[in-house]
Amino acid sequence: MRETGILNREISDIISSQGHMDELIVCDAGFPIPLGVRTIDISLAKDKPTVPELIEELLKHHSVEKVIMANQTKET
Picture 1: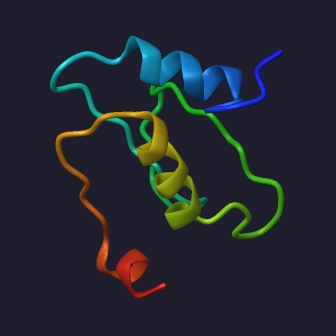
Picture 2: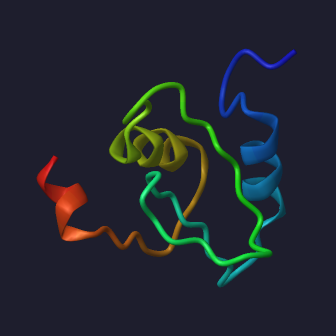
């Protein structure tokens, strides 16, 4: 059993399988997601965990070229 890094198996699988130029979107419940797109719901309660919390943790364990954030997220 893992005790460090990304513990969620599905998230770990996605970031481990990403290649150059692949994209990962971290969003809240209001984001429109097209049918057929792989999703992982990790919500525990309303706004828990927050998008900034998730991004902060992902950046500790995953190299990224660029982060794009909505203005609403930047203000929180």
